[in-house]
Image 1 (spheres, rainbow, N blue to C red):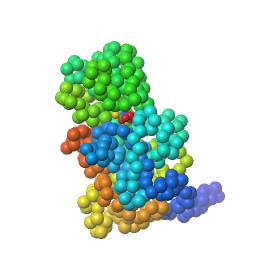
Image 2 (tube, rainbow, N blue to C red):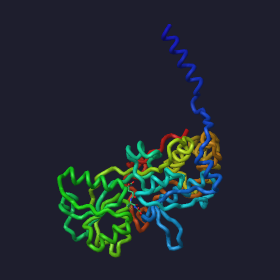
Image 3 (spheres, protein in one colour):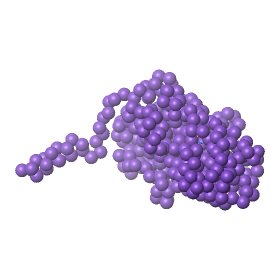
Image 4 (tube, protein in one colour):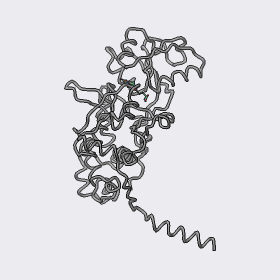
Length: 345
Ligand SMILES: N[C@@H](CCC(=O)N[C@@H](CS)C(=O)NCC(=O)O)C(=O)O
């Protein structure tokens, strides 16, 4: 009797949620409404890290994070220019987001439990895997961080790197002298003048800083990594639909690379692909767009505007750019990396 009752309940449940059906969510998104009313996305970015966000000689923001902002503007407006870039320091970024100054942060921001649980904010989904490291003078004789007994180490206020550095040196019982700055240019000047023996931050930012040193060969990024620094967009709590949009937009860029869809072939793939995954992603069939209450072509428009993950990476910080970062953990899972798009169906 009980068994039959359970079987009937199970059958009813399955009938209620047929495979692939879209559960419509009609709760509005205050963030999206505000963006549409304003006519532009307000995107919080790093004030200046090559490869992530740095103005070029014409004053145009270039980098992975700024491309992520432009792509999100395409999702909303089908126009990558409808972004207002808001540069924010490490220590003010989360308050700026919380107060509504920006709609989202794409700002080299590591996901941590306490940021997620105590700031009234939500991180979204990982789009970049990094780890904390140190840069020192190449002729310093230092090859491992634990050799820096009594060294003066530059750090930036309000970063995970402050705590990671303190935790590491405490764990190996090696004293060091922190010098805390508000901005990386101040830390760079302190390194160059010899006021600091080392600078500690995420390894991608170290590579970027090294590339902007007067003589890059005089500087070495030590090979050790002391933390996990997985970057995600941050948004305010309590706006699930905005969370869905930012999350699945980020996923779509990775999914496009997994499927081999590029800026150049997206149009052709949309016209001719018989692969149901491709047809769904590119909006030939409408269910993904419907689930987000967006144009069916939202992801197609993004790929046409900014390309897939690998294209964005290679253009902004890859081996052929001055930053010159190998893909490392930011390769697709199928290629030995950590990038793994959740199923878009
Ligand atoms: N991922 C770390 C560090 C992010 C960060 O802000 N890094 C520094 C080092 S390059 C930075 O970009 N600062 C730019 C600025 O504050 O102007 C975090 O989330 O705390």
